[in-house]
Image (cartoon, rainbow, N blue to C red; front, side):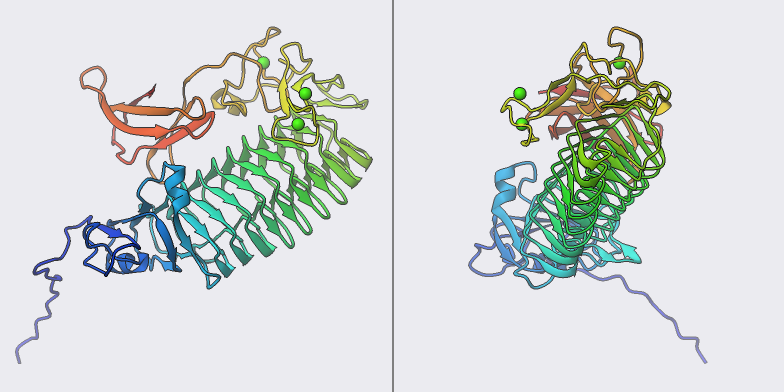
Length: 495
Ligand SMILES: [Ca+2]
Ligand SMILES: [Ca+2]
Ligand SMILES: [Ca+2]
């Protein structure tokens, strides 16, 4: 008997099959659905384009309001508006979940080349992730989520985003709510950076973020609230660095942060409120270092910190209020810190007024925190009085300035999250990012645009222009999608 041959046939494209890496177009104003391969023949719905796309394709979406609950179905594609860098385009390109599930759902198998960028995602309603649900607890999407406004979504867990394991950056995540945990983000374990996470609420814990155990850096986490614990962050257990954490509130404990067994470095924690204990931080038991913890308040114990039993070092803990133990309560003794009314000695501690530049800000109102300036005056007793640590050699302060600078006394770090020193423009960090792409981070100015250049082999090859990158604030990060085996040189120019 003849052995049966089995053949695996490639899918044959006869006429209109797009080349790999095709671009699909979506425009809600087209009169009828076309083949999706041009603006003139666009699909009217985003899901049509995703369904037609293959891994590696792009889907461009024209401004409009798309009443959809889009599902990536495991496809590693790029879904973007016409210009993710333009806030006007982002505001005008709306995916509205119509309270019928998450606005966007990933299956969880999308890889690091998958991107969702440049949309307003609103009115989602779901058990997990009202704005974006990234898969399941066992399989988190690695898609990158960037340059979106995610607002007015509701969920049981993760009002805006749940179960996304890729990079979440440069989004505005505001006015979302969760019945239980994570008004903004819940169980997102990738890098969360340069986002504005504001005005979100959770019925239980983590008004801004809950159980996000990746790197959380350079975010503004402001005005979020929790019914129980952790107005800003709850249970985020890895690295929390260079964030502004202000004016969050928790009904019970941890107005700013609660139960974060993380390295908590170089943050401003100010104006947070807890109904009971730990206005700034509660039960953050690992490392609390180089933070400025000021003007927080608690109804019971510990306006600044309560029950933080790890290392507390290089911090300014000042102007906090509570019924009992206003600055530090039931916590480890600090070292190299400036603490109001501190009289218990300890290595390097001082109790002199830190001489903030303008503690109540230009508006002279101490309760409006956005303008309050907790930088140090050049004659502050906190200048050059911290303790130098290895991590600071390659770090910057909250402004993006060089972290260790000689402020006139010695080459020593200042206490708190700001260093007194000159402003300089330049690259301060080049690392291999989590998606295998080199990441270049530089100091700059809000509102600017920068040009990034690379060179494979100085001085024998020329510079190649890589990208034009809008400023992300005082520091800006760009990932190079074209990694080179032997490395590259980078140069950044201010346009
Ligand atoms: Ca003032
Ligand atoms: Ca003020
Ligand atoms: Ca210094």
